[in-house]
Length: 168
Image (spheres, rainbow, N blue to C red):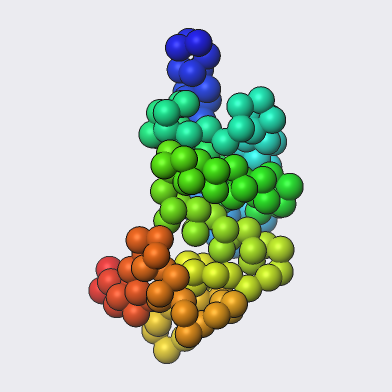
């Protein structure tokens, strides 16, 4: 069992490392680099789907903190595999309810998935672009409650987030 857990953790951590190495290619102006990024995220999404079929969503107690974080990252980037991206928040929600995962991670993944479905986000975590030098979130279901909802899951108010990143 410990060997299986270690193999699962290593697999997820290797995928996250490859993701970090190639992430900038997704924003490249070069089609070949964009294609390499899509291939990588599709391959990782397929593998995460198979892992979720067999184990559910990998949690920190199941595979270690780093591997659980890797599973979250892989789901975030599975933009062209909505079936995987839709399953991940449902499984992550169960882990949050059991105290095995972060509500903040769930909010980020849920917002990302909602936007990929063409729907409005909840917590304002996904940025549409920059206007007058400031990040602007994609549309939210309830903009007036966005900061209250962010606070509930441990995310700073949007204006604080914007100010912090404007200085970076």
